[in-house]
Image (tube, rainbow, N blue to C red):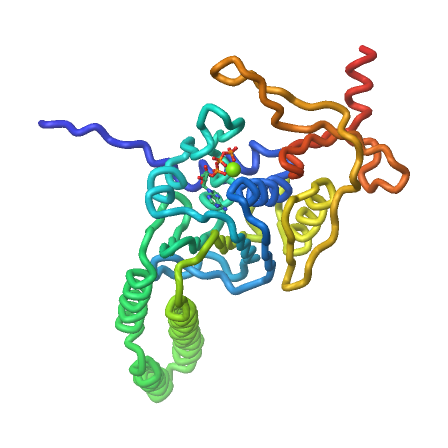
Length: 348
Ligand SMILES: Nc1ncnc2c1ncn2[C@@H]1O[C@H](COP(=O)(O)OP(=O)(O)OP(=O)(O)O)[C@@H](O)[C@H]1O
Ligand SMILES: [Mg+2]
C-alpha cells in the first residue's frame, strides 16, 4: 500500500498544557507578550477592552462554554500582511524577529495568546482570521462575510428556522394525546410517567431551539461587525475569548478581575513606550523611572555586541514593587523576581 507521511497536528490540550505549565503566571505573560509584539511592531497607541461575553463557537459550530472573558487588544503598529500571518504567525517557532540584529524571537507567544484559548479573531491589514486552537481560517474581509453568511444559512436550515415553533406545537399535541390515551385506558400511573417524560422531551426541544436562535443571533452580530469594516486595518486587533472556568488546578477561575489585575501588574512593572487605553480611558499606571543597574548584552553573529535589556531594581520607598529585580526590553517588563532570592543565592 502506498504510504504518505502524516503531519503532527498538536491537539488544543497540548497548547493548554504549554500555557498552564510553561508559565508561572500566564495571565501576566499573556499581556506581556501582547505588549511586546505591539511595541516590536512600532505601535504608538494600544486600546484594550476586557469584558464578560456569552461563549461563541467558531466556524459556525455551537459554543463550547456558556460564558467567556473577551480581551480585545488593538495596536496601530505595522500589522501583519497575509504572508506573515500564514507563514510566520501560524507556524509555531517561526518569527520575523530572527534577523542577525535582533534578540529573542522564540516565536512562542501565540501559544499563550491564541491557540490555547477558547477562540480568537484577528483583524490586520485586509485580513480577518477566525480561529480555535490549532484550527484557523485566514480570509479577506469579503471572504469572511461570505463564510459567515453560509454558516448562518446552514444553522438556519438545521434549526428549521421559522418552523421550529410549529414543530414544538406538533410534538406537544402528539405527546398530550398519548397521555390522554393512557388515562382513558384507566392507566393513571402510566399517564403520569408519560407526562413527566414528555415534559423533559419538550424542555429539551425548547432549549435546543433557544440555543440555535442564540447562535444564529450571535453569528448575525459578527456578520454585521465584519460588514462594517470599511478600510484595511493599520496595525493588528486580537479578540481573544478566555474560558474563565477552564479546569486547571492553578488557574481555575481566570476571571475578568484576575485579568485586569494581571494587566495592572504588568503596566506597573513596565514603561511601555506608547499610550495605553483601557475601556476607552488612558491608563497612566507605569513603573517609576529609576536608574538602570546594568545592561544585558548579547554577542551577535558577526561578533558585535548589542545591549538588549536593562536591569532595574525597584528600591524607592514609593515603588509598588519594592524589592524586585525587573528586566525590561524597550521599557516592557520581560522578567521579574524578588531581590531576596538573589541575595540568598549570592550568600550561599
Ligand atoms: N501586534 C503585532 N503586530 C505585528 N506583527 C505581529 C504582532 N503580533 C505578532 N506578530 C508577528 O507574529 C510573529 C509571532 O509572534 P510571537 O509573539 O509568537 O513570536 P515573536 O514575537 O516572533 O517571538 P517571541 O517568542 O520573542 O515573542 C512575530 O514574529 C510577528 O511577525
Ligand atoms: Mg512575541
